[in-house]
Image (cartoon, rainbow, N blue to C red; front, side):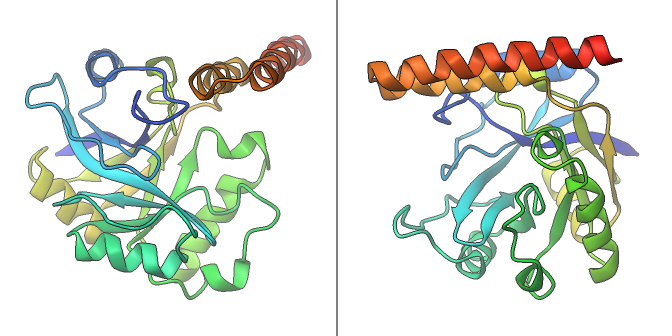
Length: 243
């Protein structure tokens, strides 16, 4: 059977996350998803005991070489936040915790270490990310090319920071059943396909920055976030007019 899983999602546990696990589950089901990977920033958020969709334990680790997703974790990762670990250290830790290591939006930045990405030991490449193209239009195409060159499984995730962003990208997994062991086996074996549906809207990114500023406190940060939000609204309006 084909299971649709959004393998890159943030909850309230992330500094810029805007939705509870319950809200994410309800919206995921409404949008036709079978599973969600909760990949909060440098955290392993415990999935709810009961939900409308299958929750995949995960994390998104910030490293000196970019962000690495840990999927299907059997226990929480234990890496210090500072100094930033290397990408290799993150991969080793994810595997130690029983998970699969997937490089997240590898070409989102012009500063990506392209040589290192060719040799970094990985279990997959995120080839469809709804936010990656906001910085570089070719980011997802380059990620697909990397996965093809290295023969690595591809994943897709919305990188949602709120329930309204879910299913902008997802992963099709060809599995015997929509269970954690079956989905993990499908991804590890490369029975996956990254599906891109739409880019994240700028206003959604602006909401995330407002949320982060409110939580971190400080008038200056809040004012900057408000200005950024206004710019995001303008960008969306301009894009709509151009179309």
